Image (cartoon, rainbow, N blue to C red; front, side):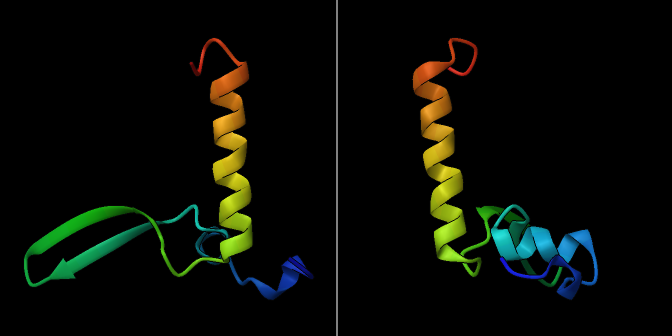
Length: 62
């Protein structure tokens, strides 16, 4: 990820790693679409794999 000071806020960092939700807005309509597809792909895949590992090994997540 490099130097974290390059992100001006936590919102920018969350958007970069894909934790900020993608939102579609048109006029008065608004729809939340889950993880942002424009995030860093490698970091996103790490989060997905970590989630699957948690589901497999932790009975609370299972």
